[in-house]
Image 1 (tube, rainbow, N blue to C red):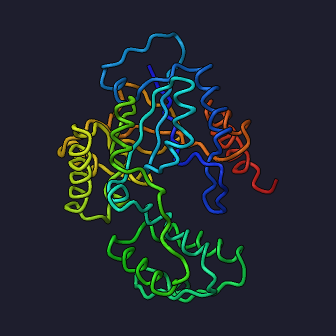
Image 2 (tube, rainbow, N blue to C red):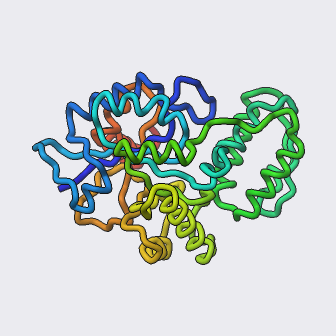
Length: 315
């Protein structure tokens, strides 16, 4: 038996040039399609064996990462309308501070400032990105796209230092407010049947370069904080950026998690490793493409075109 696990981040009608959220209408169309073609099951309870599927349809689950407040505003009305279970994995430092993760803040400050330059002093950043100038929004977006993959790979201390440098230089942008769920709202969601899990404390990439003591600290403290808030240690850890390795899995088990979630466009077979659960991320895109993605057809098409290009490179 297999289950397709779908990953969402934000459902929101407001556009974003870097990370477009799924609109409420698009999200409802997705949920309606899933309800018609799958049995939508609670992920954690199903994998633990506490929930038994009741239909002959294929199985799927709906999950959210990060813990943005628009989950309550725009996703929950659709979830309640179609009576489908869901899970959400929160970044505990973001809940405590009421601020979005560093990934969002970096984009937010650059997109909203009127200044036209940024200097970064860091040996972890390529020299070509230490002094930056832009003339328009397109150049600013291009800079963000260059920075983003690099920031995911550097140390927590390095990221914090860069964020501080940026805030010193960008003084015309205030911190965004009321974007993240608070603990009262998370308790309310739990009481409504939403599965609550961890997405770490600070949202770091738990890669091979991340110190193991820091991995343990990240996973353990976020789990304990969720337990203090909702009364039980979370069942699942959603690895930030879907990044993990064998040591991260081992530590997750040791501190008390029962499963780990990553990002990979394929179904999960129920007897596979519970700490390598793949999820199929869905995006703001035409619905036909989303449908292909949900059914696995998009990956098949990509593989075919990739093979075709390798056989006929000049076409």
